[in-house]
Length: 170
Image 1 (cartoon, helix red, strand yellow):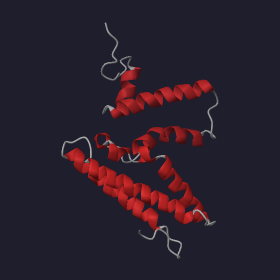
Image 2 (image 1 turned 30 degrees about the vertical axis):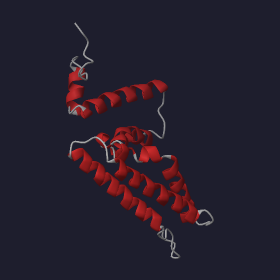
Image 3 (image 1 turned 90 degrees about the horizontal axis):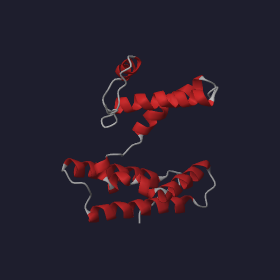
Image 4 (image 1 turned 180 degrees about the vertical axis):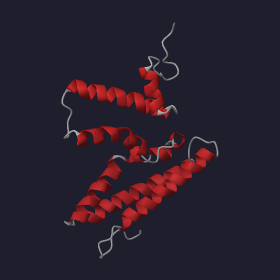
C-alpha cells in the first residue's frame, strides 16, 4: 500500500485522488467518443476500488492529527466517501458528460452577484420571484442556443421564445 501522508505534512492521497479522477474523466471521454454508453465493468470496478482506498486512507491518515490541514483533509475524505455516487457519476454514466459543475455555477452566478450588489438580500419576496423568473428564462434560452438579448427582444415584442414542445397550441 502506498504512503498517503508524509512527515512534511503533504497530503499525498489527495494528489493521488486528483490523478485518479482525471484518469476516470479521460476513460469516460474515450467511452463517449467511441459511441458506447458505459465503461467496462472491470475498468469501473478498478476505478471505484482505488477511489474508495484513497478516500479511506486519506481519512485514516488524518484522523488523529489536529492541524487545520488535517481537519480539512478529514472533511474532504469523508465527503469523498459520503458522496461517492455523485462524484463518480461522470464515470458510472459517461453518456452524461458531467465531470465539472461549471454549468451549475454559471447558472447561479447572476443570483450571487445580485445578492452582493443589493446588500445580501432582496427587498421583497416578489422581487426575488421576478428576478428568478427572468434568470430562468434567460438561462433556458441560452442553453437552447439563443442569445439572451434576442430572447429579451422577442419577449418585449410580445413574441416570447418558448422551448420546443412548450409552444401554446392554436
